Amino acid sequence: MSRKKTPKSKGASAPAASVLPAANGSRPARPGIARPGPQVRPDGPPQLGRPSLGSGDFYDVAFKVMLVGDSGVGKTCLLVRFKDGAFLAGTFISTVGIDFRNKVLDVDGMKVKLQIWDTAGQERFRSVTHAYYRDAHALLLLYDVTNKASFDNIQAWLTEIQEYAQHDVVLMLLGNKVDSAQERAVKREDGEKLAKEYGLPFMETSAKTGLNVDLAFTAIAKELKQRSTKAPSEPRFRLHDYVKREGRGASCCTP
Amino acid sequence: MESAGSARDRVPRIDPYGFERPEDFDYAAYEEFFSTYLVILTRRAIKWSKLLKGSSRARRSGTVKRYIRKGVPLEHRACVWMGVSGAQAQMDRNPGYYHRLLQGEQNDRLAEAIRTDMNRTFPDNIKFRKSADPCLQKTLYNVLLAYGRHNQGVGYCQGMNFIAGYLILVTKSEEESFWLLDALVGRILPDYYSPAMLGLKTDQEVLGELVRTKLPAVAALMDGHGVLWTLVVSRWFICLFVDILPVETVLRIWDCLFNEGSKIIFRVALTLIKQHQAFILEATSVADICERFKEITRGSFVTECHTFMQKIFTEPGSLSMATIIRLRESCRARLQAQG
Figure: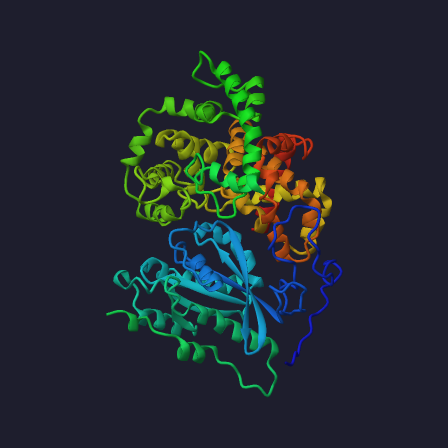
């Protein structure tokens, strides 16, 4: 594979930039703890990785993705569905502050690591979390199709994103919880219309059934990978078209 | 190891507070710790019974402070927390107030915000399950709703659900939980939960300054990687270590928090960081730092709550309230200047 970019020097302030993963040290580290690997640089372009000694986090390129949206729209569940392929039915707690998980994806033969940041949705936490927007390469903005208020707040979230995120951040709108067909309060067309208005790729998802969850993250990974490594001869990846073509409607599963 | 296999059979799957032990719970280590701790608990229970004999209230004093640092027995915990925090006095001064709050005017946004977190508060606790009878979700909802109406400047902030949940498990009383929540949110913690969260942000910076003075290598690591303290410690402050440290350890911390105030949070944080300084300093990236700050809240060092509580008063060294007040002033001013 061709790599066009090489990581810039991290500068003297980051002393450990070229150190190999440290051995588990003086304390009783549990087995299975994540080994330090090459990292996403804050405020910089995505970093091309080095193969690390651990087998778990071997990757070629890494990006930072953030999940945002109102409290209770299913951000943590979406992330866990993608990360572990499971649905957290009544076994998860409200996210307070900010947290993250990593997952390495195979995108057209390249290992792409997504570092996915999960944030508290409650409005007052925005002043704590928006400091992290500027480091994000992509944002997944969620609402809950069974909660009209979470949809009405999307504009406020977009304003927030415009103010704090990078201007070229990859952004996608997701209407989650489409498995709850009975309780639906936001029509698919309304989501599509809003997405179109702001020029955003859009999909409806279900963390419960898994509908379109992997697709959403894969689409983001493809777009980011292409942006960082595309050779001039390669055909351009079109996120909008990809999502439109690959996304499955929820209507097929409902009467 | 034979004892490892049998410890799993002897130690109940559900702890005394109703929490299911996690899959990877180390039963053998816990049993070994608990056999020693049980002796301490028994000795403390006798001492406390004598101390409280003839008086139904705990008042703050040198003896009480010493006793509290060594742990309040569960049967006296509610009474001691109520006494030393001033919650009991507030409750006595305002008879019927809590119930009037519950009958107060509907505020849909407040109710909705609280309801969103009901199924997301302690799903691992059998008493908070929807199927439990009585189900503590309703109790929790009432306490949070009443508090949001009582302190409208704060309303409801995520994190308060976990705190109120613990208060309910300890006091088994809705009204006492309400007044203890008021003692914490309204008096002991400086403005952590109001919409601007200025007190929270300030205290995170204060911790940063304390680390800079006491553990400069860790401060340099954080600066070098551009890690803001809020990333690694916001949950420590907002949830007062609930769901971060083991239940028994959290309750021992709260014993001191109710009696000595918010300074205790810094003592706990500094002790965790100092104890694991070498481990933290091995971190090579932002993600690695975050991971290590999670890792240091697990294991025998924090499970062995009695030793841990002794350490928080020795390890960080002197920590006067005057220092904290001074740092809070300068950090708050800096934050306000940043907008």
